[in-house]
Image (cartoon, rainbow, N blue to C red; front, side):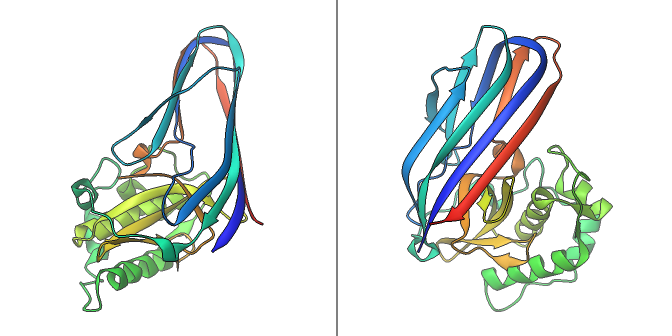
Length: 257
């Protein structure tokens, strides 16, 4: 088990005042048997309250609204977590993790790639690991090459992307071979931003794979959100009135205690 300290800061700067700003936040650590959370706190500027609810994927959503004109929006949260993959407990698999989703649909190039990796006899997890290893060899990491709207097929076609794209491509490949898979957004050690990885379902448990780093998830990963793909795990959404251009800054820190 690892004891870690985490913090997350997301700031929006608007080029001119905006108002009637409605927003929702998903940046709250999941409370799980393998992820115990303590000393958690959050703050908003401008100050306002949040209404909390849980979505279909088990994520906590905090929603709120600023009616008065403002030129910035700042959300900060921090806490302590005890992380241990050995404490995972069996749970049912929701059926939508087995089927294509908006950002994770098969394409001809993905299908051609998948033909190189027929189903193995060593079990579901080993099958997913071989797909991850093959993807890592063929796909390359390139910052700024994709956006939050890039699908798995689009990223694979251009041959490069970021952690979001690695995760969505692996999810697409796994589901095409009958493996239930879900997208995870969270934090890892040594990152200044959030990270994305994959979980596959085998024998009642969810097993984490990080295709960007070509490794199994260990006790250095903190989960913030889970869903079918990145569209279910966007940590900040909002709409406002005004003609402002917004700039976003995110800072993440995860360190061992």
